[in-house]
Image 1 (tube, helix red, strand yellow):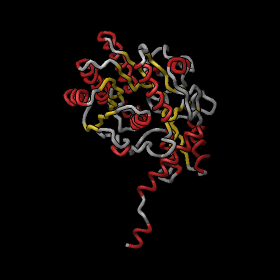
Image 2 (cartoon, one colour; image 1 turned 30 degrees about the vertical axis):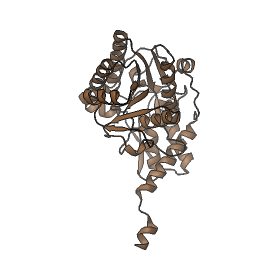
Image 3 (cartoon, rainbow, N blue to C red; image 1 turned 90 degrees about the vertical axis):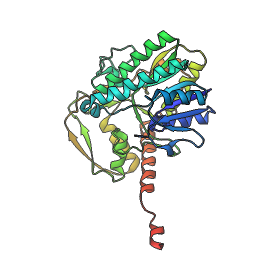
Image 4 (cartoon, rainbow, N blue to C red; image 1 turned 135 degrees about the vertical axis):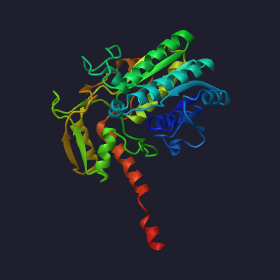
Length: 337
């Protein structure tokens, strides 16, 4: 049967579609292309441009393509933006998923994988943070995802659906072969901003908060390579297809790097000493977030391949350099015209 991937033309979605297609899985994508790119999809993967809240659209795609599972990425993901416009996040993340789940129930879809976030934990009491830790989100983004988790649990209980919730930690990097990567303009991911600075597209990189009680004063994050995360989705689909019970799983590596350490990794990869500027803390930012990964490693057939910050930085840089080359004019062609 076919897998429907919502938001499959986006950053994480497109890497997951690629991983599924390479594994021989039939895939169909719905994406409104607000932050995604049709060019990020492998050849032959059908794309329907539209809103996953449109129940008629989704129901039609499910019927036409014999869909048996849904992997749901579509949504908004920027913490500071959610602080400024919370209602947009409750609409795009929570209300949209409500419509999608309603369609899934009507169409008897019984396997559902949801793209969630470590932001549901807020500032954890213990690090590494396990899946049974208290959930106290600090932003509407985290709250909107937690509400969706609760809704998914309730729907699955009522209608016999099996699900996997994957709580992402900090996703970074790009396809190792530089086929796809993070292309969204104005992206707020730390590694993306750093490689833009390293390639001369930014004059500097801002470090928000250097007075945290951490070794170097900056926030600490658990980075996971986007291709490893894509493989976690493939493994979650296999797990559900083989009858695995519903599960909520952290997606990280279980080690933390500070913002300043991450910037240094990009400097090493690029050989450039770009400028940094220190700024005050941002509302909604979490001080330290590192995953306890024991549950995902015990539950899924998943072994990370790129568990190295320097590797993640190098792949992110290679993709950014490719984007930059594609945006620049072909000097030889211009000169001969």
